[in-house]
Image: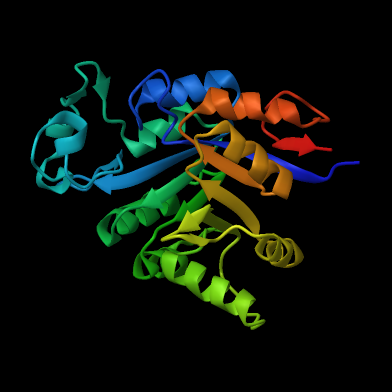
Length: 256
């Protein structure tokens, strides 16, 4: 019998062989067998969506300018480390059409364009939408005309944790609780949290876990998924568990 279902998630595609959030990073994770990929959504000046975490380009390419100050034709010419282009979201979804994409809208303008893209193109499916911003999350929930699952906003995570602590149950318009292992020294992932979420049909994904011992500990606790930059390390960590099917295909791992 299976104890639980576990989903390995490539955070920004992973960083072991290529820079984060690039086609090459996602291709590496895909080749390893990952079928749940996480990325961030930013928007250019002319409204094109890109897979990029930072609002400013300085950390990524050493240019001190915000991505929404550039038109898409300029963004398309930028090379990360002299060889990686910043992927457009629509091209990324088309290229890896048989995976689940976890899309984190980094601001309200990106969210509006993302909603328009998803409402107009029903070929994009197997998605989970999220944002730290409660306002951004509520916008997507209100205007998306499709049945696509959401994660909890940062505010909702806070409400949920407090509700569990004081035994105050509430209803949330979210299917995935995606949280760090701890926040400001406070341990977030606990047996009580996992039991509550299992009871209420909420999947718990923990980010960003890059150490093998942390991975093994969380898998042993029964989390539903782990986001990592170190995709190979996570696959190696899963070998400590007995799997019904050791291959990662479209379905997640079954852990016994």
